[in-house]
Length: 304
Image (cartoon, rainbow, N blue to C red; front, side, top):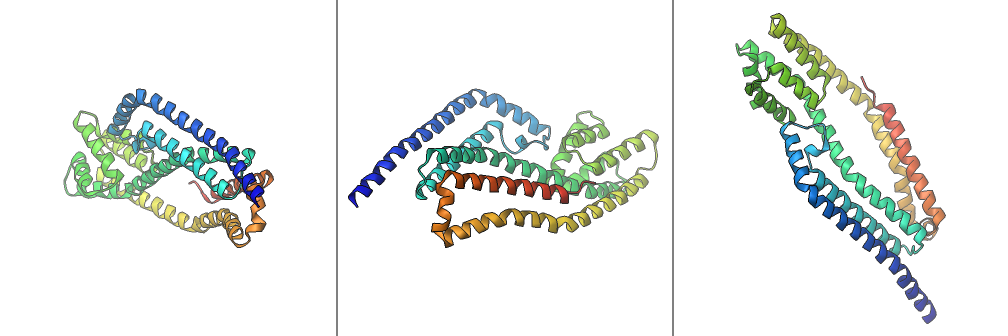
């Protein structure tokens, strides 16, 4: 009994050295990168402020500074790697060939996760903006019918709307007051957030302004066209919602089953986390699940 205890202590001491070295290297990398970032922090933040003033809405740096994002990535990567190492020790996994690659993978996931999060925020903002173009067309039509000029109708509508559309319209109005043509200012808004409905609206305004036609009639036709496109996209999204849910459910089912079996029959599943072959099998399972999820999403994500 005493020999087993001494053996366990020696194992912990031996592999504790590997863990301390790994953590020391991670801390050293973090410190070095932080020092490098400190030299470029002012320049990066100044560039981000300039981009925000221009409405850089199709970039993740609209929401977070470059240096801040890198610090978040490093912190989360180190946290996930440390948490995984702790979990492996708790599961009595002491093999360096398992710990080091798994910790590296966890660190990589921690580096990628913040970028995916802010990329999703950019995509959601663009979707909110696109869904507001119909309101913009209706607002401009109502303002013109009330006897307002197009710039006045745009400014009045910008005071009532909310969200990303309001932010972008305020930039358009500011650029118009600085001497830029309204159609050109709206084209710059399209360049920041590409949207087909907005492009139709801009082309109509530009052509009507140049040819001298009835702006109200043109906007009414464009409004009906945008409303039809919006209703079609909503129906299409509703029809493909089940496919997207099934893709997520199919991707999560094996992982949930693995965790349930691990807690129900611990002795049966321990070899999966205590041997190199077991971790290779887990890695292969996760890789195939991710590939399958992406394939199914690409099938149900219909572009029109």
